[in-house]
Image (cartoon, rainbow, N blue to C red; front, side, top):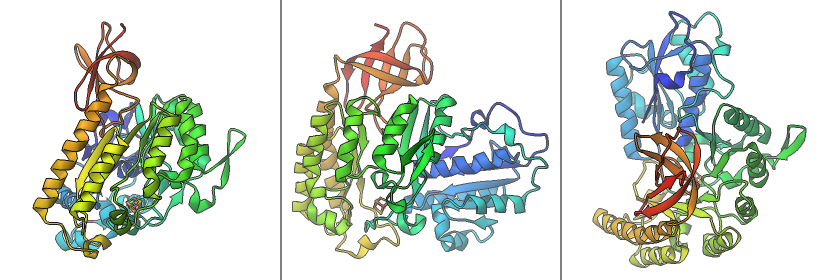
Length: 452
Ligand code: SF4
């Protein structure tokens, strides 16, 4: 959960007596970007953000509906906001199924679905006295960020054309809608001008970018840029920031982007949500991209760019998953030698087609499989991270302490990957990129010295 803090409100103060809005942001980075957009609009109109629900004019809760546990957390946040304030607007993924909210909380002021910024703003206008003057000049061109100043998520599209059986996101967010390349690049440039050093490219399916608009071109700095994964990566690589690619499926055209990584134009990092390796499970999951060729693809990527870090997520205990299918997955992990891996236990999300596809795997079997999966991958991850000992790595500093700073190498995305702990003779600054000599590694993190 992201709570909104005064530090992100910008340096200038809103007008005296401006209505105050308290904001709760739940869910994934895509939801966080939605929150940023709503807050940017609110601040542009002169609303003030409140630290607490109590004393605010109203509360907005941006919900997550991906898993049942996320829905429960969202309902709890709505209940807290109602108890502490009483005037609550609900938006985000859960807003696509309003009856789930009204059944428990019939007295919320309004419910809107994901990306319905205008509807959220309309509901705020109805519930408060709108500030007299639009304080457009209060908002910096890059908008209001909920992430630290030195990195930012860059959402390039909404929705998804795939229909994975375990996922209700297309139901909640609709089909793929890609942003024009020039819009994305303009936003990215503003972020970099405002001090952002690392751009995290996100969407539901990044490598499908532009398919919906037939890779339409738009004009960026007197050049025509196609809304295509390669072209966007190439143009973003010219902005002088680290560019990290998330949610990339192993389609053949991803091969073309790897040389940009080998050339240092974008980070040698790919977040590829494989979810499973067994062809029969993948078929039941209805996953995009030819997964049977995924191993060969991973090997080719590494030949082109030996520095490449591959992160992925998997699901164990998918309905009908047999012992053989699970063993296939473990063997595949040994072959693929992925660097960073997350694993979810299958959860029967209400409304997901997969729940009725085959018999549910018993909970204790899911638990055993999860433990075996994690143990197997931990050995692989530890072996791969140890290869960094003795090398020099660029590290972006996230937090500073009295003697040690915490940062990330090019192989580590914020929130999900490991850290690099850096000692230095001089004080380091948040957002600074330093070169560190790596002296030690444990299963997830590296330890080194800067300024050697
Ligand atoms: S690719 Fe599959 S899992 Fe990802 S958002 Fe689309 S349907 Fe859901």
